[in-house]
Length: 325
Image 1 (tube, rainbow, N blue to C red):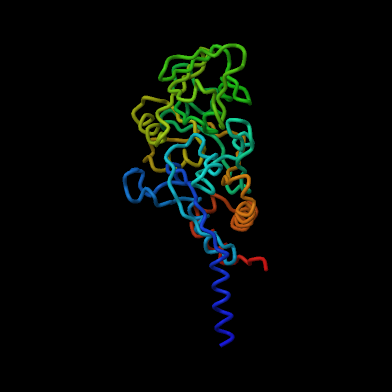
Image 2 (cartoon, rainbow, N blue to C red):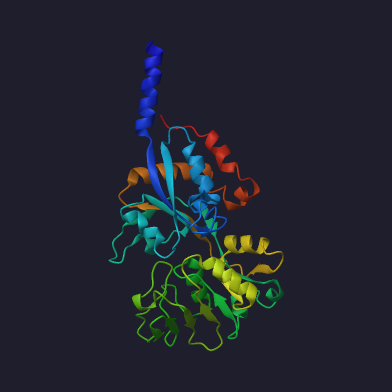
C-alpha cells in the first residue's frame, strides 16, 4: 500500500512540475522550421516539421526536464524574435540568428534573450544552374542582375554588406534608392538610414526594391514578407530575378528539390549561430532549454548535417539523458 501511495505521489509531483510552453515557430523555413502544409488555411499549417520541430519533440521526451510544447505557426518573419516579450508566447524559433541587436525592442530595452546555439548558418546565393559558373561569388554580380532577398533577415543584411550598400551596422551608402509603397527614398549622406537584420529605419520597413548608388552593383528586390521564399523561388525559376540571397541550408534544400534547375554558389565565410528566443525574465525556461540544447547537440557537435543524415538522432540522444537529481 505504501508503495502504491509513493508511486501516486511521484506521478502527481511530476505532473505539477511539468510546464506547457507556448512556442511560436516560423512556418516557411525548410528544413529548419516549417508548417506541414504552407497553405495558411489548411489544418496541417499548425503542424510543426523540420529540424527545430524534432529538437523540441526530443526535449519533450527527456525525463525530468518537464517541458511540453504548444506550437503556433507564425507567418511573418520581421520581428519574430521579439514575440516572447509580449503576451501569448513563451518562446519562438524558426532559424533565428543570434544577434545582440535582436534582444532589443524599439526603445532599446533588452526584452528577449537567446538559448545556447543549436545550428550554424552561412549565407550564399541560389542561382539557376546555367548561371552557376557566371556567378561564383557576390563580386560577380552585375548591374544587370536582380537579387531577391527577404527583409529583416541576415541574408539581406549580409548581402547589402557584401555588395558595399551597407556597412557592418547597416548604415546605407548615400545615394541608395529604396522603393516603398509611398514612394522612393534616396539615402542622404548623414548615415541616418539603415537596414540591419534586427530592424530598419521606419520609412524603409515596407521596402520593395533597392537600387545601389554604385551603378555597377545589382538591384535588390523583395517579393513579400509572408511566404516570401515561395515567391522568390518562383521568380528565380521564371527568370524575373537572377539570384536569391539566403542561408546555405535553405538554398541547398531548394537546389536539391529543383531537379537540377538551381545551384548554390557564393558560400560566405562568415558563420552565424541560431537559437530560440525567450523573454529575458523567464530564466527558469532559459536554463531548461540550455540544458536540453547542450545535451541534444552534444555541446554543438551535432547539428543540421547530422540530422539530415539521421532524423532520429535527437530522439536517440534524449533517450540517454540523465536528469539532475
